[in-house]
Length: 112
Image (tube, rainbow, N blue to C red; front, side, top):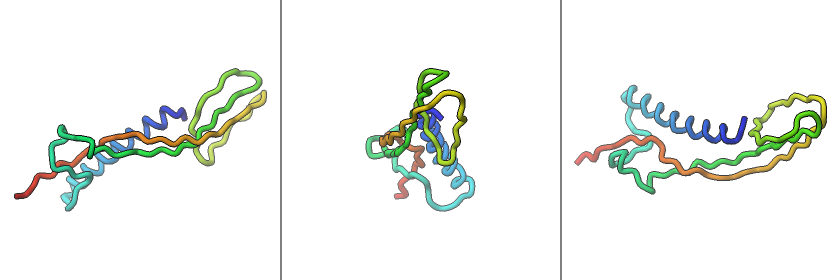
């Protein structure tokens, strides 16, 4: 999987997962809320930002024969690789970074 696909899919799945959990809680009419705020969603500010932290091992594989070129891929545990004619050089690096997001919010009205 390309690194950009991994990042975009992960962020999308987190946002979608939070929103789906909020729908399920509301539908089940259970007590409590997920990611509560006491304002409207349009009034989001810096205090609503959460950091999604990534700690990714990326592998760059360069073929030394046959096809030329390299690519950055995110490799999962237990994923195999096809071996074809020609040699390969691979380099593994660790990348750590965070992306600020505002997850879907549940607006809670003050009961005064």
